[in-house]
Amino acid sequence: MIKPQLTEEQREALEQHHGLLQVDEEGRKYVLMSMDVYRELMGVGTDEELQASLKALQVGLADIDAGRTRPFRDVLAELESE
Image (cartoon, rainbow, N blue to C red; front, side, top):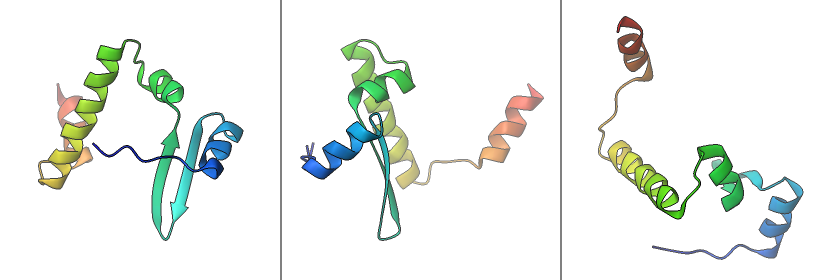
């Protein structure tokens, strides 16, 4: 796993924006957030929950890359019919 280092500018920006920062670079959009913000947003308390959450994100991204997705409207219609 790559563990990139934040620049001092990125650290300062995260502090100024309470741990959550959206970055647009050459048409690409990124979201940087502190671990505290991630844990709060995702309701992750324990380290085990954190690891499970990060693994689920990796699995979801792999599914997207492999084309294993369904249109949101289809999923929503299915949920509404149940």
